[in-house]
Length: 291
Ligand code: BEZ
Ligand code: FE
Image 1 (cartoon, rainbow, N blue to C red):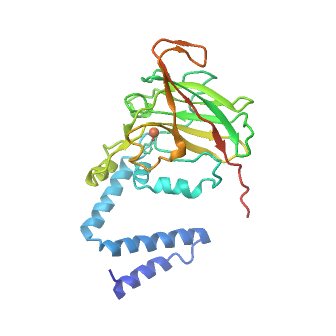
Image 2 (image 1 turned 180 degrees about the vertical axis):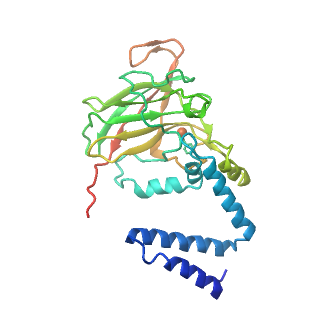
Image 3 (image 1 turned 180 degrees about the horizontal axis):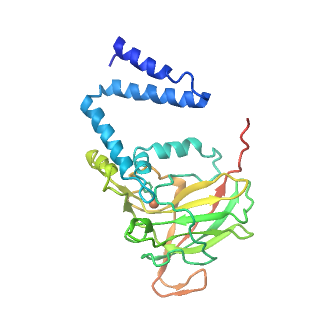
């Protein structure tokens, strides 16, 4: 669709209104944003009713957001913007573990879990023993790396989605001198992202699935290395090809092996069986920002 002269004058004026921005970066980002917003409105020939529906939608998304509900993050996630931003900014070294979306269910100050400890803390689900290493891309183990983990229970819910302040199935552990970690959690299951707000309306209108393939969240940090925010997905999950937030990367699909009974790696005897995941993480070295 062609711009007519009046439309072009409006768009050019809106873009150039940022010419005097306080920094070059601010001007670049805002002018590109305005240019693309205007291009979008021109391309679809946005009606007044559609513009108003969009404003009302974003207003409601903001209004339902709060410390325990991050609807704006969810919206960014289902539009693929979160995952695109992750991909743009992650280290480009193929040896470094791939990143994926942070999601809305991380909580600060999780409990520390000792070696072979259970971070489930009563969250229902099949027991799952997780172990592995954290190393740098040159192969050396990283001692004292903080391994932060959070996951949904067998009903597909995170602790913060319950009407209580209970903390369950989240925690952190520091790697030992050999860069290893080991803990118990519950086996992840696929779950729908929250659909009771404006994001759910959007998914239904687009006839899109709200499902995420089963996964466990990790955030691994160590001085001198880039932070790693990622998940380990479950091999064979039927939703791996249709993740509602576009977060799946083949290198992040883990083998959660089922052991029907016997002695688990921590020496405990398990009559009912357990799952086991082994995964080695590689962090990128921090690069000094020049300037
Ligand atoms: C999650 O995996 O916790 C998540 C990520 C994006 C949107 C909703 C949930
Ligand atoms: Fe999740």
